[in-house]
Image 1 (cartoon, rainbow, N blue to C red):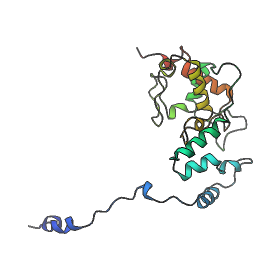
Image 2: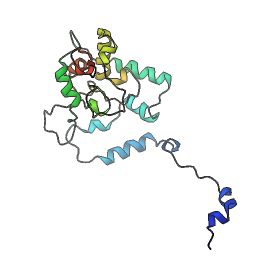
Image 3: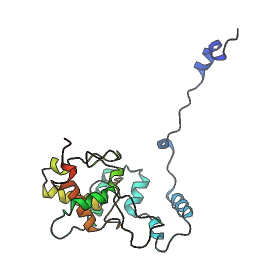
Image 4: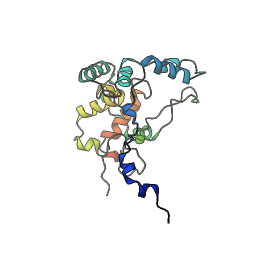
Length: 210
């Protein structure tokens, strides 16, 4: 009858040093110049005008270098700087919630293959739950069900939501949320429509499931 090595020599295995797995956070960050070079070398034959997309602005550089964990001073500086970029519409920040639902559900746009004039969507459901009846949604961001109702449809909260959608960095430094208005992904009207999707009392976002 054979005896396994593990059973025969348990002391040997107990004496072996534990091998800790290498986690990403244990790997030292690459030098900025190395990252910039690798990124540029990874994209070739760019369409005209796309080169600028490979250049990080100050906010992106800080978030990359700190791995989205800026110091308190850096975070304050980011939010103060980005808040200046938010362009509020004249009049109400609330548009048409039905159009906002289309923006939230649409994930197209911003691709190399897009024809000129392609209208981008917000792809909101990739990260958030909004309409509680929708079964397909992401969880990277918090649930936004009953968003307006929970805030009693306050105008100041709707304005804050517009700012967050326009430029999330103005509200939360190193946010994972795209800067939709600042980067021209969504138009002013589209952002207003998404705000309506969140704040209109008739929006399904604010209707409880029966």
